[in-house]
Length: 366
Image 1: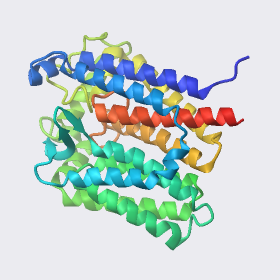
Image 2: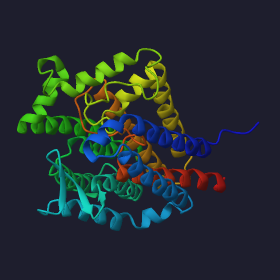
Image 3: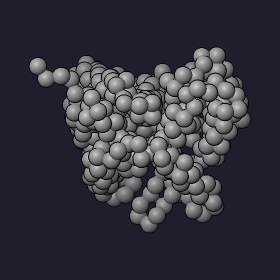
């Protein structure tokens, strides 16, 4: 009997999700693309380029020994930080809906925060791996960690992008715990993070509106509650079996960003409860493969990187689906491997390539 190979399953699963995402972008974005850019195929063609580059990058990265990222963790982090700093320069960044998260390089746009997620995983994995005996030491580990996360957090909030910061904090906390960090410090970090979130909500009216909308979307059905309600209408309209691929109605100028933040609602409307459940099960299978690779990794650095990459993708999937189904406030986080966005797709596929290399290296070692 052939033993379960998490790398092989993960590769097939990843390509399946990417191709399904491309299919849903074609369905969800036809009218939206025509309205904004005068071409029905604008989003599909742009995402197709990202798919080709991303899968090509995955196939290359999976052949590169992952230990190279441990040696170059600091330069990679500095490069990602420099890109975030460039966003603060007036006239350089591209502003969309009041957020400055993209760098425009001719026809190509880059989202530095996506690069920072992977850079942070490499750096923290190397950082914690080198401090296995001093994980709970205030000066050796905790204060440097606070300074690093504080600096990155400032640059992310300057965009602003609170959802991405939340993903990064969860990644950092998970890696700290996996590396042997004390539970007391983790609880303290959760309390501090909760206090920080409360302060950020209080400091910006639109964040308070999002929280109010989450608690009662009907309080402002045509304003701040509009996206949540339209998403719930789409999900409810899908029923058990869905309206059928391409036959969803909410994508026709009702759902904001149907190819991005709201794409899960389009999936639920067209594929129904069964289709949405299958998608959730595919992400659950992704989690099993990723964490199994982490559990069997040959060294601490590989184990931490595998945990970080798997946690990153699952956290984003949870944030997106929970926001669309009104289980948490809107965060603006896309659905990984499925939502439109070439930078996010390419960087995510590179991360999965690293994960596959960790798994294959472990099999060769054993």
